[in-house]
Length: 128
Image (tube, rainbow, N blue to C red; front, side, top):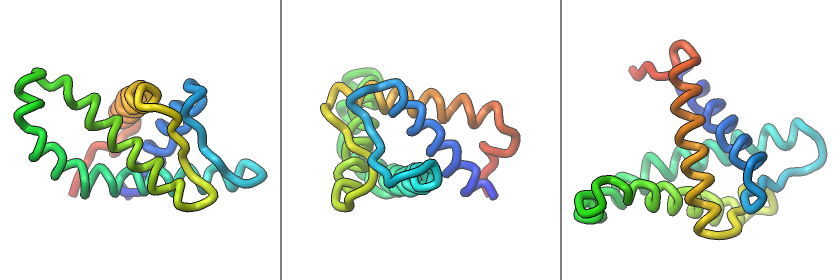
């Protein structure tokens, strides 16, 4: 249950980021149902990128994390969002990221909203 809840939370955070930023868009078919499905698929790809690629990048960039006192996290999160956008661009649907600056702000919004929703929704932070 926790996996599905995290997926919905990430989809909601991505939706809010796309609603707030003009350079971050979700391309979907006609209707709300297709938009929700595309958001869920983008959230799944985003979760997979964060689970597989991000630990490798964090290990390689560890000196930069130390040098910048952790602020390099914003850059890594933006790169993960851009990678998600690039992967979803291989299809006709998905997330489109206009620039690196948009990715930084979008990743910040997604991180904050995802954290807040995880705190507010009971059972979202439990891991088995």
